[in-house]
Length: 127
Image (cartoon, rainbow, N blue to C red; front, side, top):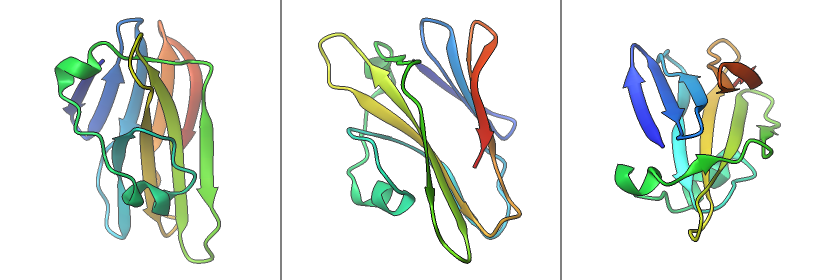
């Protein structure tokens, strides 16, 4: 898997031509980003409690997206919209990893994302 950041977008692309793109343009009053973790978080607050994987890009090269796995976790908060989408990464003989895209904002600053395979949209939304 390769990670590319350019023009306020971050893209994750595996060797099977599965692509996850995330709008990475910053706005005020929000906390957003991505994390690659050893387990899937069930909430945005849980992401910060897990240890973030410090994987070298060469190690991530062997990982591909599990296109059958997808989930959106929404935290109920009366003042903020806390959203996370989780994608599973697999590699033969290695532990699974989980790519988390997240955004916490006050309702005005969403970030779109898409998961495509060979140009066909598999999953799309906004956090």
